[in-house]
Amino acid sequence: MSSSSPVWGTQILNRKIKKARLCFEDLSQWSHSLEKLLASKYGLKIFQAFLKSEYSDENIEFWLVCEDYKKIKSSYRMSSRARKIFKRYIQVEAPKEINIDQKTRETICKNIAEPLTTCFDEAQKIVFGLMEKDSYPRFLRSSLYRALIEPA
Image (tube, rainbow, N blue to C red; front, side):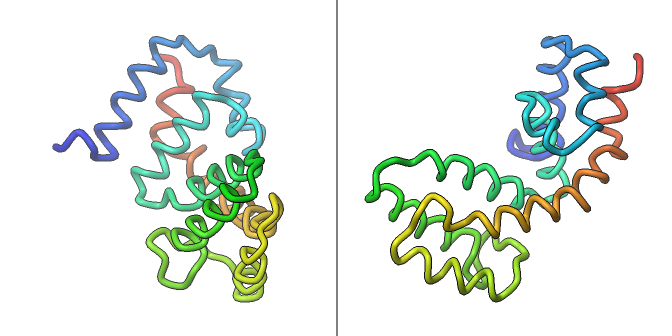
């Protein structure tokens, strides 16, 4: 098994989590909302590992990239990053194409000509909704989460 496989990464992550000694209260908070899960350093990492193990990590990647994008102050860097985000996640047949409607895709295409910190907001909301309705419930039912939450 290669060191870059999702299962291997999950095993390493499980060891790190056990070392961090996350308490039951911390872990159970993750089941309250996707926001609480993503706000937790370890919750985010575990959710990413779960999605990677399912080969469906493009949404969380896009969501995180958008969070970083919003922090950019330089218009040059913003323009450059907007084009990279568009090519990787938004354009049709992109390597990590996210599932958004055509209208949103076209709006972003126009917005990146003169990008603002908000140019990916609508797509980010759509992606968050998809994760909240699909990936997050699957995560809460996963053996990965159950193994963490159940006593040893």
